[in-house]
Image (cartoon, rainbow, N blue to C red):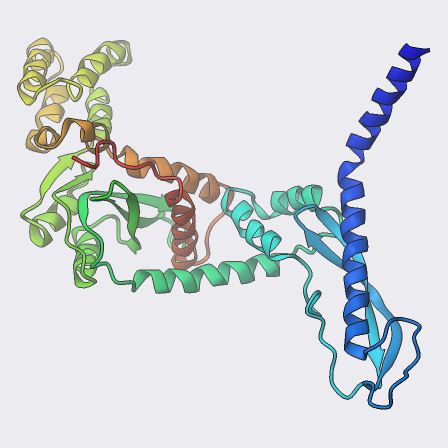
Length: 389
């Protein structure tokens, strides 16, 4: 008998657990309905079913309920009945449930965040109805209104003062997205910075023409115009546009090319059967303890491959003076400044969303979307190691 009683208790607890969210929504629904009734009672000066007693009691009386209203909360969608009044001298406006409210603020913030994280519109609708119930008020127009808000926020962000930022390092890179009427993808140019307190921030997100010198120069000049003092070192890939722009706008700063991009370019000059061996030798260079040790590894690589793979050697030596400036800075920072991983990492979440989209009709729409994604990613940026040095 005891075993039977125990199994029944466990089954009862399992049923209760399965129904927990349903019970919770029911209680929230009842609680909200009670508050609406109290709100009407306070407005009229008397409870439901109570007659007017004093002469100066507020005019008006209850007039049943409006159509059932669905309200989407973080716990799901609930249904409430909004009380109506008639014969009042002033219009009644509920503070608890405004006339056109269909979702709580928390859900309103969640909708664009989920959309940002890669749900195409069809999948978005399906996923949200699974989370919030069939009554969830979702539509393409509601998402469009939320995205319009990002555009306004982005325009204000582009004009903000930057004189308070004390920059140590900059990372610059471009990402290409399907946007606009042209067949080619549009280039969006991104600049991130590490500040003296170790934090990393996004400084620029602008559309540009194929990462040209003119596009990068315009971005760098705009940053300086808004009070930014450019950093001691800029890290970027091998694209000539950024280096030409830096030489003109920020000639006093040091320049570091990304080792990941360099290694990839060198390996492209090898047959597949040799790439693994060559990759191990190349990867050892930026991890050498000193600049001299790095260059000894370089010289050994040249001696080994010069005769049969001269193109690979030429690719390695090209722009070598930009491969080793990181050695001039604190050892604790090397992990951050020898590659563009700092900017490549948030690009992964950007590509998740842009891959889900077919094509942005306007480059401006893509820019605002990617900026918002970067703002989300910025909250998770790790501080620079050894920033107190």
